[in-house]
Length: 276
Ligand code: PXL
Image (tube, rainbow, N blue to C red; front, side, top):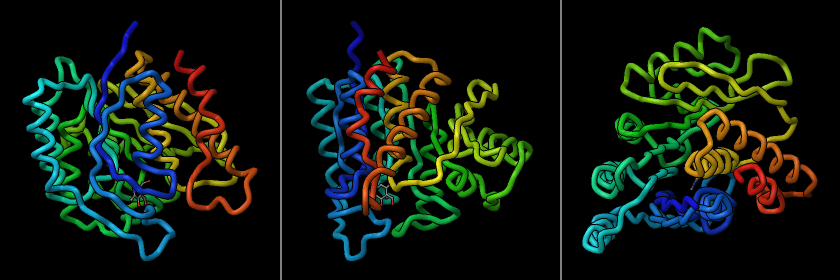
C-alpha cells in the first residue's frame, strides 16, 4: 500500500467551503495523510462576505518549520493555496527547500484572482512573490486570470488556442515547469483543462455547466493533488478533478441560497471511487 504524507499550506476560512476546510477532507478522502499549515484564519472567505476577520499567521511559520525539522518530519508532497501575506511566500519557499522528503512533489495553486481581478487584500507585490514561488513548484494550477497576472498578459474572455499557447510559453519562460491551466473554453457550452507537462500540450474537455460556485478552484486543486499523489498521471488526475468539480457544482445547483461555496461533501464518494 502506498500511504503518502502531504503538507498543505492555505488559510482557514472558518465558514465558506474553501481552502483548508476543502483541502483537508478531499486529500484525506484520497487516502493521503494530510498535515496542514494554516496561512491565516478568517471568519469567512473574502468573496461576497463583508466585515470578515483576518488573522495573519506568517510569524508562526518559522517556529513551526523549525519544530518539524527537529522532529525529522518530512513530506512526500507540499501543496499551497491561498497564502496570507507577501512575506509568507518567502517562508513557504523555505518549507519547499527544507521539509520535502526525497522526490517531494511541490504543487502551487496561485489562488489569488478570478474573472480578471485579484482577490481583495492582494496587490502587485503579492503577485510578484507568487510568481517566484510558482517557479519553484513542479506543478502550478492557475486559472486564466491567475496565469495573466503571473505573466503580465492582458486578461481576455474571448480567445483561441494561440492565446493559451502564449500564456503557456510565457509561464515556461518565467521558469514554471508543468502547468495545469483551468477553465479553458474553446467552444460554446464546453470548457476544460490544459495539461502542459514536459512541454507537451494535452486538453481534457468537458461540459460547461450553467451555474458556477465560489471555491471550485480549491476543490479542483485539492482533487487534482489527491489523485496525482495517489499515483494517477497528471492528465488522469486533471480529468478526475474536473469530473468531481462538476459533480460538486451539479449538487450545489439543487440547493437554495447556497451562494458562498460548493457542496462537495455529498459527492465525495465519487472522488473516492475515481482515485481507487
Ligand atoms: O477560494 C480561494 C480563497 C481562499 N481563501 C480565501 C478567499 C478565497 C477567494 O476569495 O477569500 C480567504
